[in-house]
Image (tube, rainbow, N blue to C red; front, side, top):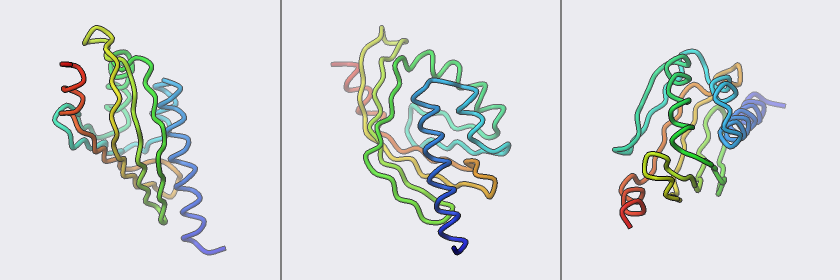
Amino acid sequence: MGGPLLSGQLTRAAVARYVEALNAHDADAIAACVSEDFVNEHTSALGRSVTGRHGYRANLTGFLADFVDLRYEVEDLLVEGDRASLAYRMSFRLASAGGRPVAVRGVFRFRVDADGLIAHRTDYWDSGEVRRQLDA
C-alpha cells in the first residue's frame, strides 16, 4: 500500500470520528479530534474562527448549549490524501432564539495531520439562510 492510500484512510477515519463526536454533543471528544494548533476557520458572518485546541474547546460548551439537538447529516465526502471535503446538512434548535428549529446546508474542508488529527477546518454555510429561517 502506498502513502496516499494510507493517508486517505487516515483522513477519512479522522473526519468520521469528528462528525460522530459533533453528533454526540461531546465537547471533550470533539476537541480530542483536533491538533494542538488546530485552525477553525469560519466563512459565514455568524461563525467565529479560533486557533488552537484549547480555544476551540473553550468555545464548544457555549456552542453546544446554544445549538440544541445539533445534527450533521453527511451528504457527500471526498477524500484525497490528507484533505477532505464534506457536504452536510446541519439541523438544530437555536436556544438563544427561543429554540427555533433551523436546517442549513454547508461544506467543511479539512486538513488532517500525520497523527490523524484535524489540523485545519474551514466551514462554509449560509448565515443569511439561518437568519431567514429564524425571522420566518
